[in-house]
Image (cartoon, rainbow, N blue to C red):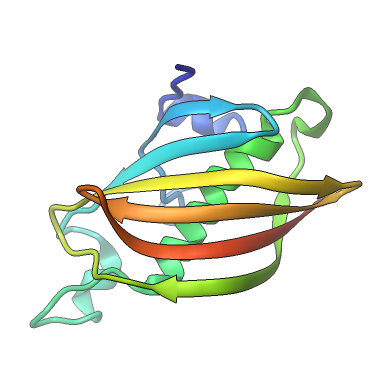
Length: 142
C-alpha cells in the first residue's frame, strides 16, 4: 500500500484549506487509482448553513473530494508533476446517502480512460461500507 499524508498530498495537488477535502491517501498507484478519506467533523464551515438543524455534507463537495482523489492519482505521474487537473465533466452522478458529522468518508477514484491531457475516472464515496455517491468524472490536465 502506498499511503500519503496531508503534506505529501499537498505536494501533488494545488488545493489548500479550506478547500482541500482529503485528510489522507490509504493507497494509490500513479496514473491508475487513489483511495483516500476525509474525516467529517462538525467544525466544517459548510455545516453552519447546510443545514443548521440537520447538518449534511453538500453533495457537490463529495464530488469535489472524489475529484481530488482522482487528481492525486493522475498528478502523481512524473509527467504531470506541478500541473493541475481541471473538471471537464460529471456524468452518471448518483447520490445514495447522507454524509454527516462524525463520518469517515472513503473516496475511491479509478482512472478508466486517458487520451492526451483528457481522462475519465470512475468514482465512488462510501461511509462504513455503504455507498453514498457514484459518478464518472472527466478531467483535463493543464
